Image (cartoon, rainbow, N blue to C red; front, top):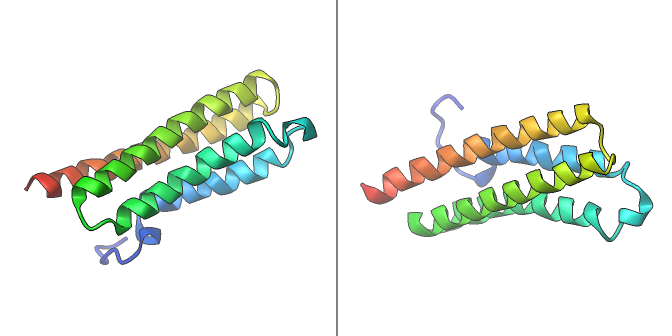
Length: 126
């Protein structure tokens, strides 16, 4: 980001990469069986959306204590998504290759959210 001031949650790398993950989830779940329309499909989508939503909400909070809380919730949603993707792979709704691609996106998002939490804690504790 070349040292530009972060003005919106959409400027956060953690949000950007997690948003890419959400879009990939939507593309992937289009191919899920119709019987999952009220099962795994909406669960996966909700978990993915929750990641970016909690990053956005945390960004808007005035205190770093509150920010950190929402960033941790985002990580929890990300872990929930990782579990659901394992299920989708194991029941053969996604290929191993698709799983690996999505899993790598979740790892990237997790690392970026961890960095956001770490930086927020440093500011909170200073």
